[in-house]
Length: 523
Image (cartoon, rainbow, N blue to C red; front, side, top):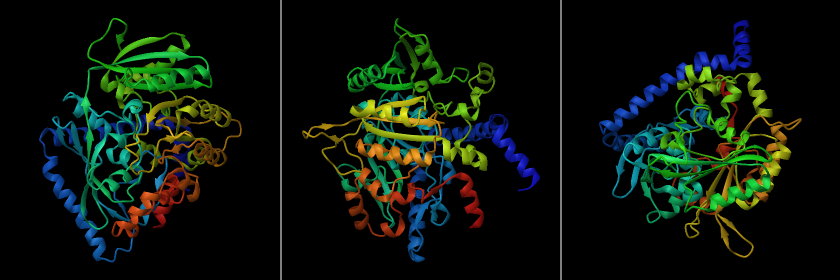
């Protein structure tokens, strides 16, 4: 390493907040503005539907070329692995044949059928802007602006309305897939149903998603948000579960745990009017405190409260601070002066944050930094929080309830919990752990495999964007592969073209950004 490279690495490691402010924020803001303008033009002038068929034909043409040239390499999308939400980068993209799938647009809003038809790289920020302006929303809007439809379908998506509508996959009405045979296949609960139910969580191992139809519902102007602080674990579990199961009154339920016995539980419902019981709080404005800090004030003041939050502000309330991850990157980012001057530019691009990681920060992240979502039955919430407290001591924790829909026992990777008496409980909770644990002598290499074992014992699931230490056998214990395996055998060229899910999401298929740079140089 040259002297200049050493200086640069020192700056990136020890002055990351200043570097992110001076360099990453302007680049991210410029790219975001360009993307917003491009999306607006495509939607405004209705250019996307006319181009969609040609783009899909181009995908099919690339696959047919692969077949004619011997079909020797595995296939993957050409989209940069740096753009994923995972802190890791897909290693398999270095050796696989890349298929260009440049599909970013909203194709149609069918208000009569209550359906929006989208391309897979349309983002949550883009979709919420377009739909809300027409009086509609997705029933489940995962928070971060840059999350894509394809990533949420092929991986998983959860939000604080999931106790009512299920996971992101449960608001999907149909998919359009280009298979490794080079055929465009539409699937839904009534057409090619087996393929339809296997696509969620499949991580592009059954075909290339080129469009999806999602359900939409009418939206109102505000979310009436009620904050309730709780001061014991038992109280938190009782209040949170009661709110989660009350789908008649609560459109949204969220918990933020600030310690093992202190949390703020939030209940939200749509409203067109501001009631006398609260005031408007436009929490999405750039100068406002980061949302988790704002919610914490109800805990420190030991009081309940009600606010009326503009609906799009509510949907994307954690975007500017990436929940609370931004505090480790820009420690002074929530300072009132910083928010006022530069809050409009937050957050910096995840892609740029990963790309500018140094060997030192990578080493520290691999050992100490946690970005995990674990999905456990809500009846196991208390022991799950106790487990996190004992083995991680990492706060805040994000709690989002979700119903894993039964769909009449249709096939799928993820199933509701079947009780010993044969009854079905579909209510789960996503526990999101993001940050550096306070547990003494913490080491990811020890803690995360034990956590995965614990989740399997609770009949739970792991979000697959996170680090996956499980063996293939444990992975198959967590996720039911029976229908998935059979379908991969039936689809022509499928096994030849695509890795299995485990091979893409485990340590075999993904590496830290620094290692990816080294591998890329060698190839």
